[in-house]
Image (cartoon, rainbow, N blue to C red; front, side, top):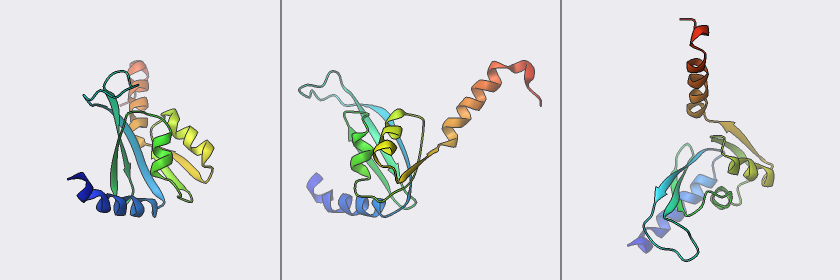
Length: 123
């Protein structure tokens, strides 16, 4: 059935690439298929969200090759993301993009700071 969805997926990616702001994230995803040369079953589910498209990419790696391929031929824009270093590499290679921190990830730092210094808390 996958070939039947290929034209729809291609159209979604084209539309995703036509926009100028994306949220990107990746999370561990277990795939229990043995791949020659790959140790273990840990893959990564990447999500790229623009204002009107959400596109998921399942990849065996967390490398910068994934966002590079996803945003191929895009002239530039803003990528909201966590602090994972692959996005920094992406921007070094594609200087017309700007990285923005994700506030959900930043919130964790504020909570950790508040919990580390409870005596300084002001309610």
